[in-house]
Image (cartoon, rainbow over all chains, first blue to last red; front, side, top):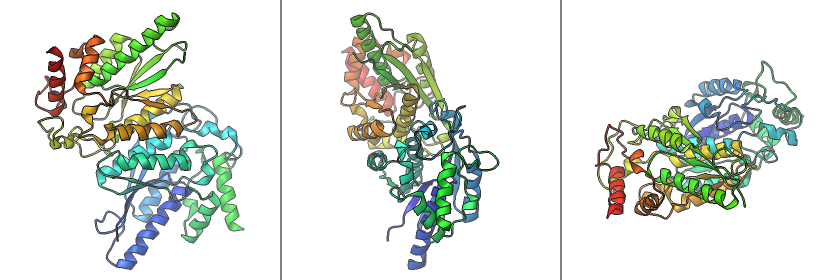
Length: 230
Length: 230
């Protein structure tokens, strides 16, 4: 049985937190099966390491959530400060002095929240980390709800990033995006099964004291979680 | 005639300096042709902007060369500090406390100078810059001499990066790598034609006061330039 070593691009939001739980559950199941494998930085078993980026996002609060979740789950976690790259990624409502649009997550107005080339940058950095740690793959929690607005969350983007990630280094790194064709509602459903405590995650793009409940991210979260309660 | 707006990944070494001259020459030729186009940040003509990275490389001297060359040629230039990413790209002789190998550029020992996922990171950042400036393409001066040792300089890598760069954002960005199948010697020959002053460029990986003349980068440079003098 191959032990997978995974760097997870981890925002501290609903989707990547659910993916973290899924990865840990997989590791646990394997450990039970072979009974001698431990989670964490252990050469003998599945390993999950989380990587978060401080890119000057308004909703920096998500990074505190990320930190707390990893601490609680005893998962190695690195927050990398890439604020100096903000000058390259200019023009988004998430990083610049542009109002966060309110409305539905799939509305065209939400395009203002696209950050230039964000996921390619995140994946490129996570792949570098995987190569230098000798890990096998990079996991990312993009999902079907992202497809309408974010080109760098679409199946075509993930397929092409996977193709280049396989050959860009001596070590072949796989891109693992198991939520690619799942809706946020399905992710919430999986999270429920995995007993994810979503009160510990952060979603709102505005990053104020409380979620605004009006931005696309808030609305998508509410829809997914309320569907779950039904 | 389409005016191309290009972000050049610019190290201040021989290859990217030659490419900068080539791009400026192309812009000039076009300007002569239509007689109303200016080089630089001008919406009416070809535009070239240079982007350099301070990634904690030993041979940081190349950044001074990059700065001086751009100043002299009056080309907009940005040096982005990505030293905080060093932790993700660990393990290379160019960034860590590992000796720079001496010998030929194509020797297997030169593998110690591979920086994990470096060109994917550089290109991902340059693409972000191109998207936020509304530029058409990203130029990079990888060449045939790099293929033996650096997986992220090979034609397959450039082709796959181009494929993903085309679709990763609402704005399609092209990867332009015109030296991909040229040897360093052929680049030097082109440089001679373009009257590039190579004394203003930096190549040596060790980054001491003078070039060491022993590392692979120095040897490749000397071979290319001495062939030119013959």
